[in-house]
Length: 228
Image 1 (tube, rainbow, N blue to C red):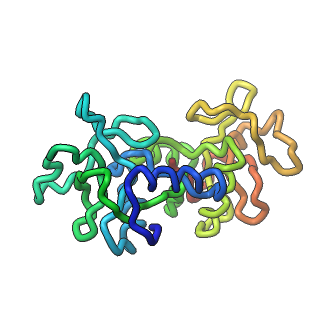
Image 2 (cartoon, rainbow, N blue to C red):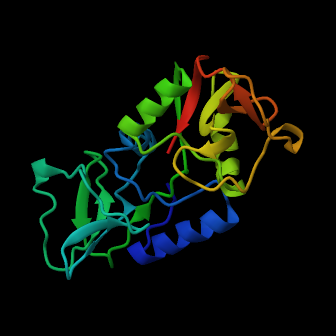
């Protein structure tokens, strides 16, 4: 969490700038309910109310994340009658005490969160198990499809307790691909050599904690994994 209260629009600009100049930071634009564990972890050190990238389009009354995605299943502070939908309260923040969402005027200065791109799930699972977990609790197994995403993952992997960490990289029908549909233009294989005909049990991609490169592993092995 950053240490200066600012208007909502400035918090978006600062987080956007950080995503370009400090490639491991990205603005939170996914549902808090999908990132319950991550938001709780980041909010544990929260010293004040904080913007989280949530805003409402007043002409249609729909809450959205700054990435343009509709915000669904939000954790509103219903015990405090939130959102109260008062006039011009079109931005959302995380309430310090309850760690729930409130609406507020976007012109009100608050601290704010910039969030990392990935969540490292420490529990160990097979690649299929990791995929199912990520799609249930988050959005998908993480795609490291750009250098920026790779840098983000390299920061997170330092906390991993397994030698490898599963990613959304998979081999099927003669080609490697990201399970979320991202293009496979950027690669980080060992010595830049993509495995062309991997053995049948080596069709799942992981990030190597020691060498910081991609590797193909037995899909039945159990590792920690990245969700996004």
